Image (cartoon, rainbow over all chains, first blue to last red; front, side, top):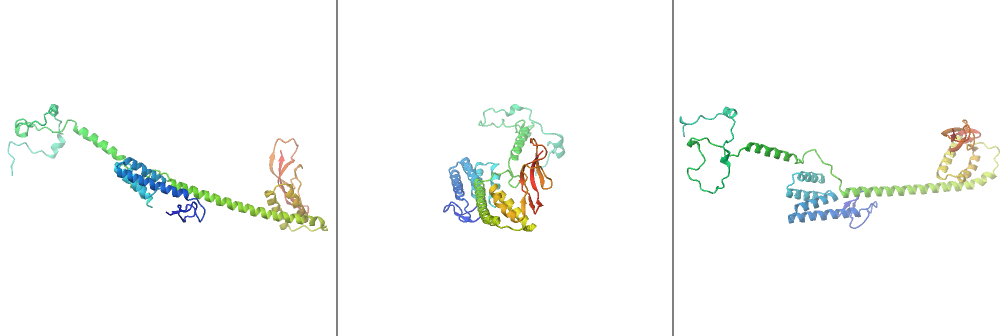
Length: 101
Length: 246
C-alpha cells in the first residue's frame, strides 16, 4: 500500500517504514487509519449481506470519518438505499462525487 | 349504435359541472358496514340504479375530498425533507481523520525542520562571535602597548561599522566583559563611548527614549541606557538613547 507523504507528497509505504525516507515525516499513523477505514468498509458490507442495514450505515459513516474514499461512500450509499432513507441517499451521492475528485 | 330516446336525461355539459358541484351522499347509513360482505346478494338487493328511477349515489365515503387533500399536503411536506443531490446546498462536511492527521504530521515536520535550521544558525553565529572575541583579545594587548602618536581617527564608515558590530555583540552577549573587550578597538579607532548612567540629561549627546516618573532625583537625570552612544575624535558619531526620570 502506497500513500502520499503529507509533507513532501512523495510515495511512501507505511507498512515498511514509520517515517518518510525523503523528509522524515511520520506516516505510520496514516497507514493505520487507512487500515481501520478498510476494516469498517468490510464490516459495512458484511452487515449489508446479513441484512443489518442500520449497522451497515453506521460502519460506512465510520469509514467515511476515518478517510473520505469512494469505497466508503459507495458502501454508505448502498446502506442508505437499503434503509430507504430519503435524506441520506442524496448526501451519500454528494460524498461519493466529492471523493471521486 | 344506441340513439338517445325522449326518456333519457339531457347530456351533462361542462358548464353544468361548474354550476352544480357534486353533493355528498345524504344517507350516511348506506356506508355503515353491516358485516355481511360475503353474503350473496339477491337480485333485488343490489345498489339502486338509474334504470330503477332512483338517484345514483357516490361509492366514496363522506368527507373523502378533505381526506385526500390532507394526505396530499402531508405527502408534499414530506417531499421537502428530501435533498436534491444536484442542489447547490452543501452541508458542512467535517474533515476526515486522515486529512487532519496528515496536516498535523506535516506541521510537526515543518516545525522540526525550522527548529533544526534555527539551531544551526545560532551555532554558526555563536562560532562567529567566538572568533571575533578571540580576535579582540589578541588585539587588546597589542593596542595597549602600541603608543600611537595622536593617531588619526579611523574613517567614519569604519567607525559606523564598529558601532554596528558593537550593537550585535551587546545583543548576543550583554555584559561588561564583552564591552570591556571592545574598548581597545574603540580607542584605536579614535572613538569613545558616551557615559550616560547617573549623568544629567545632555541633549547634545543623548536622545530620550522614555521618561519614567516617580523618581526621587530632581530634574532629568539618566536612569539607564537603552542604546550606546559614541564620539569620534570628540565629535558626536551617534547619540545615546536613554531613559530619564520625569
